[in-house]
Length: 369
Image (tube, rainbow, N blue to C red):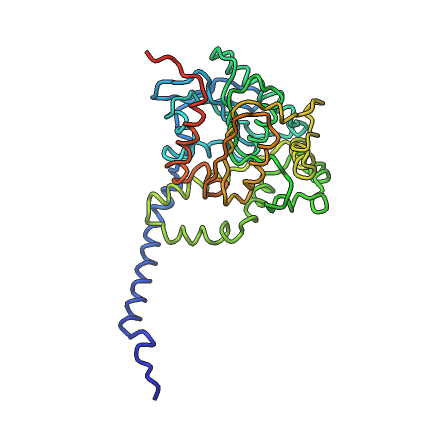
């Protein structure tokens, strides 16, 4: 007879495995009330701030700081028109805003607000040459400075690039986080999905007016369906007892579900002119009739990208470098995803301190008292 001893678990081992699994299940059930309470109490965007400027739905936030301001040029953060900007101040230990405050910058952030049906005709020039320019003018006047440091994230980085090309005399340094600039190649599913043969953006916007938030959220979720619809919930089930995990999980869920509509004509313009025709790096893109010339960008330029970014490939962001007139261009990569670039603990241990220091070294130091 073939020896089978040791090939199968003993009865005792089987009973122990069943008992351990049963205890895990009861622990999960016991953790449900605490998880629900944590979800209800999650707080995001907690850095104290004032609203110092408003125009239409736009609000400009100026953050309080316990640290002395060390640099003459304030830092303005320009977020995308999709989702809410508090991803850059998600939690105290995962906050780009806090990183910049800690390094001695006076920090402002644009909250674009929520596009309404009345905003459907707004175009990129209304945001870049209108609202963004008004914000920069307000800060310059308020602080008595000629130039500011500008930091743009994702679509906000694209708009910041356009602004700096149009008004180079107003920008001291330009920093881009995962900003889509060069739309050539097929590095992202978005490049495939937005191709003219698959996506009729004219018909889409003609029907809906604005780009609905549910459409955007569904598209982003389907780019990584296994992770977004299955794995993250398995992880949640296994970690319901971990308070820190729950805090991080629910803060990200709150932001991830907080999609907002994009003004219809802006969405049409962004898809047709950039995703489908790549006009920005080709030197063919115009805002309000004025050609956006990337070689007019001459300030120090910092390009930040994430290697696992499924929305904006590093190649798209770094693709700006050959087209600018800047003599100083630094590129930094991190092993993270699109959102992890802003909120991962890895990014905040070393990546962001290095980025903030780079901007600081190129800013004008204020005299110490």
